[in-house]
Length: 99
Image 1 (tube, helix red, strand yellow):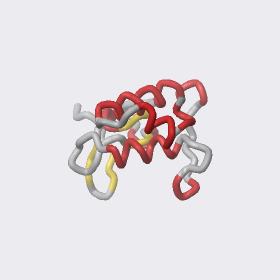
Image 2 (image 1 turned 30 degrees about the horizontal axis):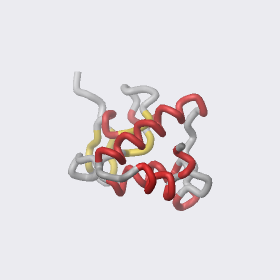
Image 3 (image 1 turned 90 degrees about the vertical axis):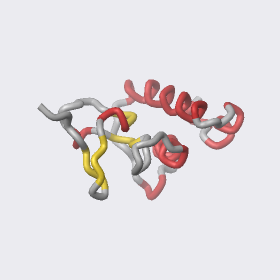
Image 4 (image 1 turned 45 degrees about the vertical axis):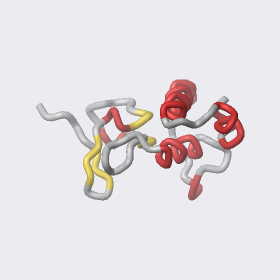
């Protein structure tokens, strides 16, 4: 059986390309994409995911994720930002709610 994919603008993404995957067999549940259209970790997408968890989400798009799952998502976002070269001080300045 083929791995489920979620389609965004006619591009298919796997579960590993999202921060929140409550059911890997059900792509409609996946939220907060971390990779760009070339399937690479991308600071723009990681920052957008971080902003979505903040007090004023972009475009007013609050995401419905259980509170118990938020800490793990925040840790993953912080780890990805570090991989992409963002310093902790900059993260704390731009995204204080992650800490």
